[in-house]
Length: 238
Image (tube, rainbow, N blue to C red; front, side, top):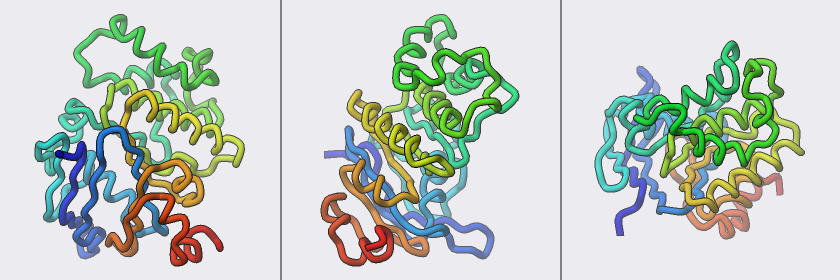
């Protein structure tokens, strides 16, 4: 059976830096899969290669059976892959609604035709639903993260890439964000999650890959990874 996402032997260089070394992973339709690792392990680079932001040196990336490595980001979005980037990447001087419109730029429908879908996306985020006319830069950090995810959902992705959604957020807000991630997955969106908070990631995702210095060193169900002595010692503080 063809995986929704199949990454094989992926290498990425930043000049002389060999950031990814033969990374291979699969994401099946309907899953939440997480990438766990320390800073600099290559997690975010993996997402950027999938979304077309960086060009791989070698290897293949297949989405829904078709190769997408080397394609420009807007084409990859149009195929059904959207990313909420690390640091949120919102447009601070635009309103919440204008940010949402940016998320739908690859869609052929008009904004009025997307009203129902916008409403459906915002059902996950009541905190920002009432602030459509507010400038995005005035939102709290948690609300900005919610906006970044909602904006990505407006692209109607089959595969949603989430890069460090808990970064810089208070623990209570982190719990809310991860509850929303599970809700989004239950409504049918497949998710590839990069997350520094290994405890939350492994208790949210179905399967996981552990990256170290650009290589996949472990892969298993999240239940088994959370019980692995190496993972507990390095990433779970136990």
